[in-house]
Image (tube, rainbow, N blue to C red; front, side):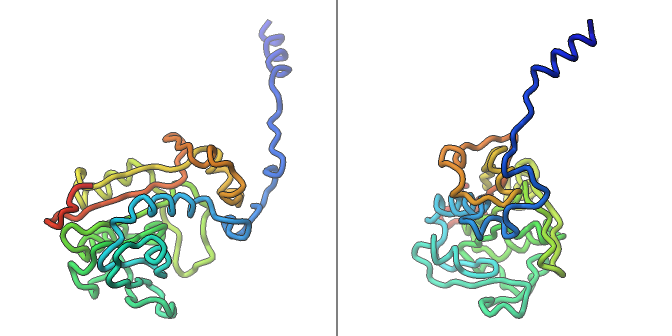
Length: 234
């Protein structure tokens, strides 16, 4: 009887049809940038667009000032932080985990997107991110939950992936739980599509916009430094 049940079960199963995803190499080696908008960047931009009002005053961004220009409102000064001294756009050359050379209380907003996975001393980096913000200043950070292993930036190394729970603890320890807002973006389809190199434009809006807490692709964090600027609540 057990054998018959197993045979019947096998007949009921239908093999999954993976189509163009049945492959051992990604569709894109550039995270989908050569096909359209990388799916993780779609969520990063969605997050920053929702917090345009925070990107004001003196703003710091990593690697370049693209998001500051695109989403900033009433930006007085824009600086770029990079560990690479050969970056012509960098106005500050420093490792964020040991950025003692950056004066404390310097910035109203720090855009820290898709960067912490490359910093081994994550707690040290968050300590400096908080230190260089002015009272009431806002850190807008994003981190990957799902991504390919990145080797192309050697000697910079790809160390970490983050869950929402980890972000609650890491950022809450530094800024205070009541001063952070953590949100996960993505679902199983967007995660699979991102890993295989599809672009955001190759998915429907309804597919992109559904966020499933069981299958996050990316986590966003808005953290507010304690102070009296009127923006002290997350």
